Image: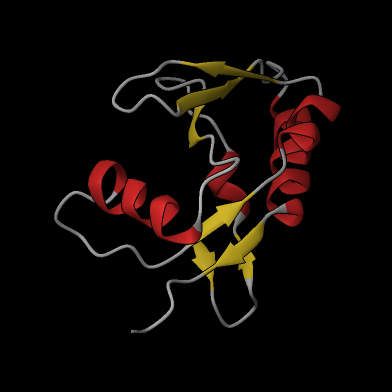
Length: 110
């Protein structure tokens, strides 16, 4: 859920659903690029290729009154962004702000 052409993460990336009310993330502070991409390959993509990722500072999440809750499953650095408001318009506004704050990263071709 991104646009390489526009170099942005799309808003729907941060829109929780009624059945899954949180957003799955990985905390990557202090990891080098290779280790970050490896988490994506091993724990996110499955059999699909990793096309991109969105890097977002935790402080932005907290600025909008959300929490980051470590789950440590399926990886020790896994967490969920939770605490979204029940008001759909407020949730969409927060999701848009988070998407705009993300830095889109694409894997380097080697």
